[in-house]
Length: 194
Image (tube, rainbow, N blue to C red; front, side, top):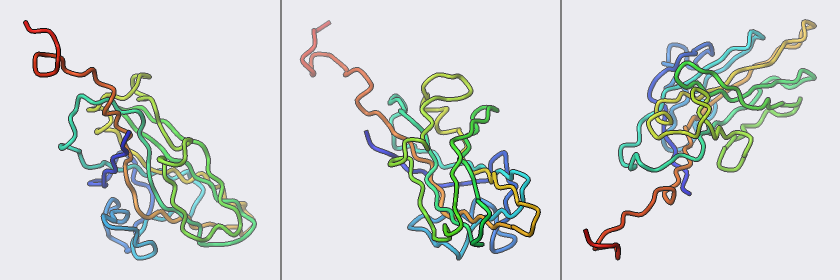
């Protein structure tokens, strides 16, 4: 089942991170259509108020809407910039029809200052197999409308321990099941004539 990756096209319901360079629209800070530009443009969070950010993503008009979607996930690159004892933590978030769902917490230790890609095609824990708005498997239209993003879960320790979490590159990954639809049967396909 192929994974389709869609680019961000606009800010979502949550926009609490800070863009770099300043004044850049949030979604453009993580819009890297060819590959990641890492520290050239990014969003960053540096306080302990559980800042969240979600994005709207492009549609996929070339895909037949009858095919079921096995899961959604956010592909992103993140890193911490301040090494130290403070543990930096974050989680992916999904927002669908007014319902928010949070993925598992990711911990970045003292030395985790290199950019790391989190890809749901590889990391099963970063997948959302059900639409939280319905509790059922994704429909194609709902999957296209869903927002994805990141929440910074870090709590500064109050003793001078501070953090700076950076996020660059964002893709909505959709696992599309092309074989999940019954074949059309008819005279041209060896089926009964009517």
